[in-house]
Image: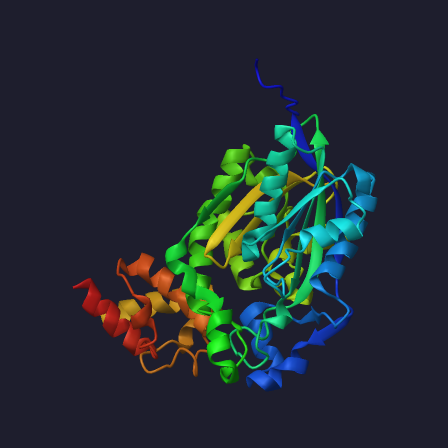
Length: 331
Length: 80
């Protein structure tokens, strides 16, 4: 007997939702602790301000808000969601993973749920998983959410990271569609570079020496910068080639908001035409790891810089090191 | 390649990458203190210099290149 298949034709993003923590933190609020200045932070990263989550703005609660907004914008009901995927690097506990709680809170009682961990590439990897789930027939609707409390794991005294990382959440609803509105993804990883963005210690190491400081993020900034501005240009072009899309046909370029100087360099190297909107949400949101891409696309839409129906090139890259990206039709 | 030519080509790169006034670029100038080229811009300057001069400048070497003169000396040595 042949295996039955309900292969659907395609998938599309049907709704976007975001959550931005209430507390706005300007460069001058944090510069003293890292012996720096507003000017230095702006020049180094392009960041003017960022958001820090308070005690009530947890990875789950921020994700729930973002998901609820995405669900409302998509026009589906929570009971129609088949899968909830959370991309995060900042679950504060080993277990349980958080997608299950999020699914419960958004009333997606028919959904399966899991977390994925791919740091700054997490959201775009999650999009790829959602696309596969819909196109295979496993799901009619998937919600992918990136949610982070980077401030739980970044030292306010680390000159290399304190001014970069911040908190927030963003979500997409991805639904069955007659057309292919999400391209195949291009992804990769280089585990030989795992130490370029990592923690100062792991939990067992902290347990052995608890007085030596909490685990915190550390980064080889210059090395990561060089990797991003060299490798990601070719990857961005590969994504476009695989999607059969030229830079002229793009409406927006939405890279992970690591650093505006990386964004500028990749955009220039790709020779993006003037009409292509370039996401710069990081200037007021900082680097929210798995949440930067949905937050950034949301801002471009709200500002009218990209319109529904236009094409957006999404590219996540970072810790691992790893990367993943695709072209989508903007909902 | 003469020293003057390398300085002149470096000045073009510094201008393109970091907006440095080409007339300010001379052997004695410090990248960071005199020309205000920060460590991220140095990455881009090094990459452009590698392309321009056909040399390889490893990461461990970059931190030793504090002045334009240091860079010119390294490039001259690597080109021979």
